[in-house]
Length: 635
Image (cartoon, rainbow, N blue to C red; front, top):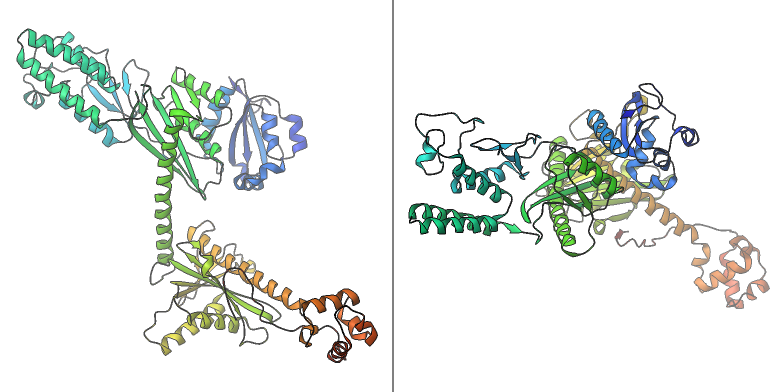
């Protein structure tokens, strides 16, 4: 029984931990976080609603990006009590399917997997392919990993065993048998007298074959072959011999993964960035029948959270459920989850995350499969992203190498420019470059950007694309330099160039925009578009690099003083003077005897210091101090 504790359809609560602590009970149930327009953005299940919901508001939980984003969007909370934790599982699963909340992990591939159905209640059963298991008394075998896998199995059965091939559930009488009888692949009970006992023996053999009990099946067939030979029925004995040979060849191709002849689902999970790849291995009677793969994109959830969400949605009464489910990643409350799945399967189902032994090795195989698939997905994803970038921005070729350009200065002082490099969408920090602006004075962003580009063009290899931080003016300045380079050297191929500008709030813009040469209006992409994300990553990295380099340069220049220009005053003597007098001004005002009192300062050097400091206090002097970030620093 599931009920609402408030006696009304919907009661919404403010996201105030103190208030929620007073109304949330220590009981099982389901909670719903609500976003704008009261839309459900997350559905969760809890054994103890009060503890689970309030845990979201503790700072330790905000380390997960997905949770932090969800809480930032959430405006209210609803909850529904259930009498048992099993009912909470059911309700949570139903609500996730109904609302498809933005921050829940959704199993997109919800199609049913093919199974084989054999209705032993019929006098002459036939083997059919179905995608939905019903509680109708028939035998179901599977699920198979694909339609090809199930068709391959039916072809073997059709060749080895002589069950009827007609798809009618009820046997229809025919005047003459079909071609399958002529090919010796059917007993043709539709037109010939075939006893139910003879047909039932064949059905039992098919059952043993599909259950993986091939040793038992072969032993029974050998006994039957021997009896036929004893009765001088050599034709029947030869037929059984051929059947045994076909079965043994099939068994040789099957991969035994477990010495324990049992049904198991083995689930492994791997992660990379925001991708989570899940691999399910179907083991039936110790033999690996196939695998199924599930990819969860744009997910920063923990592996255990993805695994738990998968189990709830995958085993919700729609597929065959084995007696053992092995997981590479343990889940919370696995015992209660196992009880819920056992209730759906109408048998005992054990959920286990092994730590050693044969089961651990099986799980490691599943994880390795998931990792290999994930690597392939990453390559395909990068290729698709780069091809989409080329198409949307009208580039000459796929931008496998992108370099972001930016400058930084303070009122024109200590001006610097940087180049950051991305290869196949990933930062390549070994190719980063720092430039100190030498030929532009004052505040002139366009001139500084032009200088950086011109100096970069002098040092091949060049990238496929330059990304400039700025608007149409910055783009035009860089494009002019590129055009001039082509005029000077007609044989050179210069990179494409685009610029990324921030939104103009005055015009009501909310997303960054991309400017491309020869186009008046910018290319506008959705806020969550992968191409825009890539451009923003390159731009932000260039900006971070430029600001950091500028700050380091300013900091080092500020530590330099006029003392560095006085012959005989090294770092040790300078530090001794600063410790003694606490500043350049006091050193300049010191008497000769006071200077001579400093360790390491004799009379001649003291006179040089007084002469060097005559009429001045502290001064800044520009320098060419190298900044060691394991990158090239171009002076």
